Length: 602
Ligand SMILES: *[C@@H]1O[C@H](CO)[C@@H](O)[C@H](O)[C@H]1NC(C)=O
Ligand SMILES: *[C@@H]1O[C@H](CO)[C@@H](O)[C@H](O)[C@H]1NC(C)=O
Ligand SMILES: *[C@@H]1O[C@H](CO)[C@@H](O)[C@H](O)[C@H]1NC(C)=O
Ligand SMILES: *[C@@H]1O[C@H](CO)[C@@H](O)[C@H](O)[C@H]1NC(C)=O
Image (cartoon, helix red, strand yellow):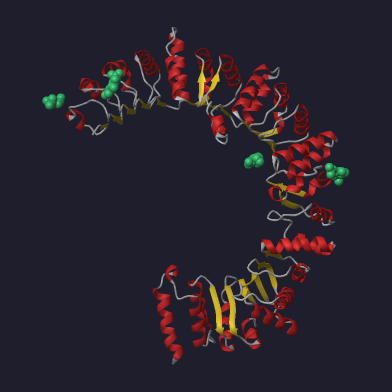
């Protein structure tokens, strides 16, 4: 018996094949179904398991006799709504279609050849059957030869018939290009249906809508795309038509693809509550807030902010005093907005007013020059506490005076990346940090600090997580020794805390004075666990200066210095260290170090 033989093969598959290795291919299933009668439910269930093993993907092609359709139909009953069915047989009868979709059928997806779409469409039209078919996504498979326009129109009309009888959630036509006019029956389908079209097709459809000026068709179009027009280029007339539609559907448009939006902001203002801009450019944002300010149209501001996704991006703009007033007016009528002023130029005398409106801002992006000006503004403000708190909150407790925001600048502007902080700057930074209620990140990379300024930072270092250039770190270490013992300990402890127990002075040339200061610092603070002094030109003499305190450090890097055998005994006394790196020194006799694994010297 043929059926029996096929079942032996099938059992082998089920027993021995790991699901992910199952590679019989989608056609295999069709072959099995042709050989078997699956009348008994047990056998249908076995076939359903087989289908599960192949990831529920089922290709029906070639010649598809009614008996095979019957078998497949029975198996589909048992597979829930998991099956992805590709239906492109060379030959199948209407009776076959009957057999396949005879009962309640749920499919995850159904991909049809044009012929199948025509056959099934005709079938449901003629017999008014098929209401029991539910398909998550219906699509057309691309054809090898481009069908004629007439055929395509018939195919689309068949699809429209299927949509009337079947429950289809999404129609995917991205792989075929249907003439725009032919799409109208699909657009007019009333029911919750999402349609996916190729970009080219949508563009044609948009032009058609523009030509026809048909309200119903426009509404169908909008609802089928859920108002998402981000991938399309429109023009004002068409957008205007869509915006005027009584459906009040919100439209999302991509600003970069629709530069016409910037031509005249005024005409957009009445529609702001119905439009969302993706990738709005700063010049547009500025023009919009300017127009609103001129008209004193504060009630529109919430709509504007919603359409800008609550981001006011004015990066790289040169703001006139009037622009600043417009910004302030906007801020005054907003709440929780993100403000981007990276590389924005603002007249100095407007800084203070911006500070006072920061309570309306949830997040502020600024470059370091403007940040420093705002910090000065806080220090000079009558309402120091409030201004300082707002500023620190909006910059997420991160005072970044490094060059990280400069990376996008052209090369010639990057030459002068060092920011020189004067005593006045440090006083202002210190004054705002004193008012901070929580730890703040202070980033002084790419900065140079006047000695008198660095002194002013010590009183706030205990509230700070510090990242600084090595030169500034060395400078701070050198400023630890002061006359008063109490101050010295205070400075050392604050600095250790700000450094979060790690100090990296590698590649700094350490002299006697620096080593003495470092020794004093280590003396006063117990927390420093990692110290990197590689490439510091340390000699035996300098190491001796440090030696009394070095035993506290757990991870110590002394590699690439000028240490010799004379320091061996001293180094062996570093009892608490976990690792001491000593590569690249002038140590000749390594016998003593080889016994102890913590020394890395080879
Ligand atoms: C901009 O649009 C408004 C309103 O539609 C119109 O009154 C005005 O003339 C337009 N301005 C320009 C420069 O086209
Ligand atoms: C702000 O605008 C600039 C320039 O158009 C853009 O590169 C940047 O991604 C925008 N930033 C935000 C947060 O939208
Ligand atoms: C350290 O050694 C290098 C070469 O080994 C030498 O050029 C340099 O002058 C030495 N530095 C000191 C401070 O002795
Ligand atoms: C190397 O040091 C060990 C231990 O201090 C010592 O016993 C040995 O004699 C030294 N070797 C040389 C060649 O100096």
